[in-house]
Length: 330
Ligand code: SAM
Ligand code: DTB
Ligand code: SF4
Image 1: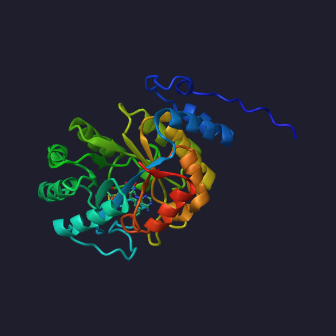
Image 2: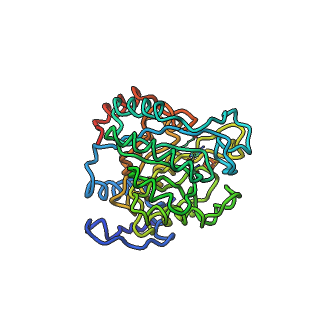
Image 3: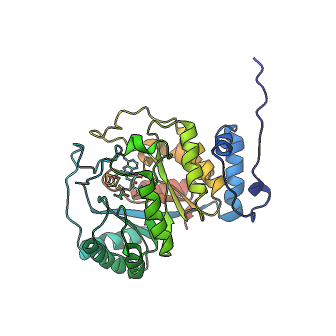
């Protein structure tokens, strides 16, 4: 059977890496997704190589500093108190225990340490306590990142003054998918916190999750939303849904791995200077798909045996994978 030839469109940034960031229509990103796989990877690699050493990968280690019992109902999340997932709620960790974990991450080769709290948002007194954690971790010479939920007045500034380099706050999915996956807050609430972070001069880490039953158009819309931020985030985690028993999204049809790779490539092409992080879900993806993600322009991973509450490839397995691929820590 004869098929019509596929029209290949190459973005202007491919020919001119120093071109100013462009505004992306969702349809343009859908056109990237529709490219033949090899052409998409070629474009992503071309953009990647214009801005980064393709053998380098940045290593971030996560620590859940306050686990479970969260008041939000994010349908993907094992830490919501709305679902019975077996995750036990804990109090905020103390400085010594956090420092111990940070030292271990640094010794294993991580350069960034990201502290996550299962809060809808921190209270003023939480910000004071987390600030002490940030200062201590920063004192080790690590880059610091925190993800604490929605921020209020003055919070971002206090965290910045304590030594916070990045704040992670994901938009998670396309604007028109958001109400399906979280009902206890609005998409606009996420944008408000991101504005506060930017306004305080803290670098933005913002991405999303794929494999939540969204359409390809919605994956393209997630990428468009990120790429059209002015400026776009310095760090973009692309998570592959980790399906946890007890959460409403457990049992969702698993996304085709090539579609995940395409999402990474679309992020790389549309956000040439960002660190695209191959984030949650690596255990289920396997080594070959991870290698494709690196080819598609991912240049950061979560590194360490655990994400927040679920598993992650262990450090020795990741070191072996990077060695096999001839890659090294940035
Ligand atoms: N509570 C804060 C918040 O929601 O912003 C910070 C911690 S929350 C766990 C950070 C991010 O982890 C979420 O925005 C979501 O993108 C990601 N995440 C949570 N559960 C996940 C899962 N099961 N699979 C993939 N990513 C997940
Ligand atoms: C992000 O984008 N992914 C991380 C981090 N930022 C905070 C969290 C992934 C969580 C995966 C499920 C869990 O272990 O809770
Ligand atoms: Fe709470 Fe964050 Fe999990 Fe949502 S993603 S339930 S806000 S910890």
